[in-house]
Length: 217
Image (cartoon, rainbow, N blue to C red; front, side, top):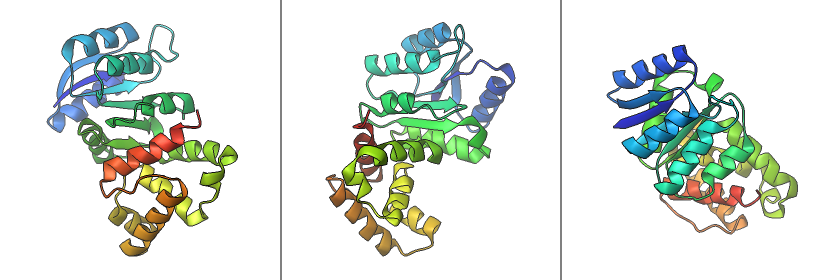
């Protein structure tokens, strides 16, 4: 699996390269600036891009803008964003096309190698990998001005948050220490209240939820 990595801090970039190579990823390019990233994504056609939001020369949003441009030119290009902060606008723009293969992780909340590697693999395979804090902020913004979302019970909101992270019913049940049947009931209620099509496909239902959340941009 070929990866293009963009991170301006040398030590972090080098550490990520070593980590990914140790888990059998091929590093097609490891770059430190927006222009380098744009060229790498256009020329190398990686299986997945792991991108810091803020890159030189301006340290604003070069990383994400390069990734979004590449994703428009190559629909469905898997992109995993790394950031120091929850940037709601960035998260929503990344999710806007609803095609999957997206992730948004906060650097200081990646606690172990397996967590990060699993996120890269999940995104590369077309799935989602969203940090819980990103989901919480998207949910909180929608809840403030959206009546259907406000209809959800506290438990349903909790299930929705975990669902949007990419978790299956079984994983959610384990996290909340309830039965899988109870989670299936909560899930059905959530879909009904949000007017979403019911689906047993984990990635499809996550995308449906994220697409719904993105309507409030």
